[in-house]
Image (cartoon, rainbow over all chains, first blue to last red; front, side, top):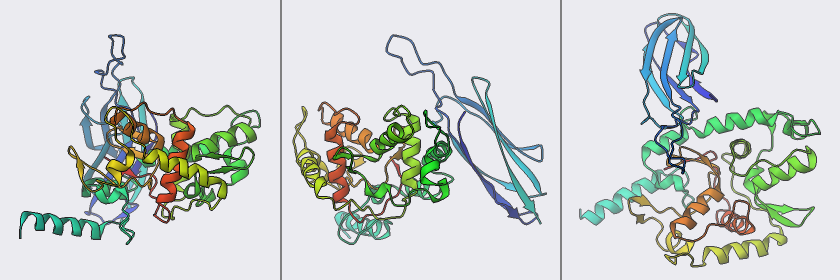
Amino acid sequence: MGRALINVPKTARKGEIVEIRALVSHPMETGYRPTGDGRFHPRDIINRFVVTWNGEEIFSADLFPAVSANPYFAFSAIATESGTVAFRWIDDRGGAQVETAQITVT
Amino acid sequence: MTRRGVLAAALAAALATAAAAQGDGRLSGFAFMGPDTQAMQKDDTANPGMLWVAEGEALWSQPAGQSGRSCASCHGEAAQALPGVAARYPAIDDATGEAVTLDGRINLCRQRNQQAPPLALEGRDMLSLSAFVGHRSRGMPIDPPDDPRLAPVRERGEALYRLRQGQLNFSCANCHDDNAGGRLGAAPIPQAHPTGYPIYRLEWQAVGSLQRRLRNCLTGVRAEPFAYGAPELTALEAYLASRARGMELETPAVRP
C-alpha cells in the first residue's frame, strides 16, 4: 500500500465532537477489468478499514469492489481522553497499512 | 424570471464565486466544477492529488543513479525546493535549444546530473515528482518565459490548437474557444487553461499529466494521439501556457 493522509485535530475539549478524515492511496482493482487476453486483472481492494482510539474501536467499514481508488473516509467521534488514534487498512493481499495520530483532550 | 434568466443569474453567481476568476473573462477549469469537487480540491486532506505530492516529496530526497545524488542534493530541501519553477514551463533547454516540458526537464536532470535512467513518462514516479514540483508553485501566477526561442514553438502550438483533425474533424478551438461554457453531453466544456496539472481526475481515479489530457481529447475527436513527450504536445503545452499567462496555478487540481 502507498501513502495516507490523515486529519485528526491536535487538541479537543472533553466531550467535543471532532471530525476525523483519512485518505489512502490504493488502486482498488475490482477484479472485473479485462486484461485483453480473456482473463481479468486479479482483484486487489482494501476490504477492511478500522480506526481505534487508545485501542478501542471507534469506526470500521467493509469495502467492496464498487469503492473508488484512493478511498476517503470522514466521520465524527466524541473526544473522551487523550491518546492515539490508529488507522488500519487491510487489503486482499493481506497487506496492512497503519497510521497513527496523537490527540490531546483537555 | 424566465428560465434563461434564472440560468444566467445562476451562472453569474457561480462565476462571481469562482476562486480563479481573472476579471478578463478567463476562467480556470475550477470555475466549471460542482461545489463538491471544488471542496475536494480546496481541502488538502481530501484532495487525492496530495497523495502524489507526498510521494514526490519522498522521492525528492531519494538518491538516484550513479551519482548517488538526489534532487535535494542540488536544489535543496523539499520545504524550500523550486518555488515558482513549475509556473515557467515549458521552457528552452539551453544545452539543446529545444523546448522542454517540466517532465522533460526532470528527465534531463536525472540523465545529466544524476546519471540515472529517465523516468517513464506518465509513470507513478514521474507524476509524483511533477505533482510535488507543481505544488511548490501553487498559488503563483503562470509565468511563461519571455524567451524569443519559444515564439516558434508557441506558434506551432497555436497552429495545432486550431487544426481540425480526426474523424470528427474538430480542432481544440472548436470546443474550447467557440463553445467554452457549453456542454458536451453532460460534461461542461472549460476554456482549456492548464492551471492545475498534473491533475487528479475523478474519471481516471489517478493523477495524470496535461499530455494525458491532450491525448484524451485527441482520442475524443477520433484523431491519432501524439505520443507522450512528442514535440507536438510540447508545442501545445507552450501555447496553452502563454494563453493562461497570469492565471493562478492550482496543482494538484481535482477535475471530474
